[in-house]
Length: 76
Image 1 (spheres, rainbow, N blue to C red):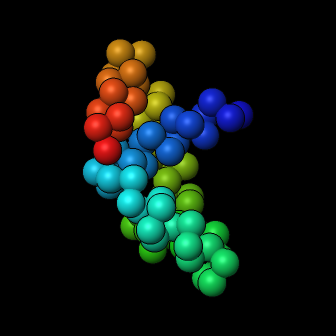
Image 2: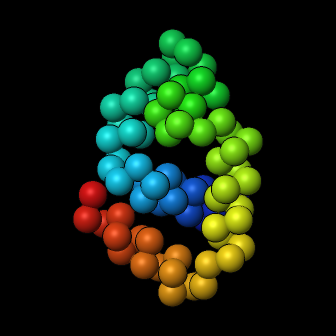
């Protein structure tokens, strides 16, 4: 399942346009507001919405589209 986690993180970074959402918003706030609320605050999605949107993207994307996402994220 680690592989899917990598894709999920890549998708979130691409969606927000920066990895700052992880480093400056999500991780520092988990201890204070909990995982689910920190996730929603940082990414603007509930976990349920994330899982649904990510699954739709993953299932409908070609391998080259997925790899392009990783390439785009390497710029952040």
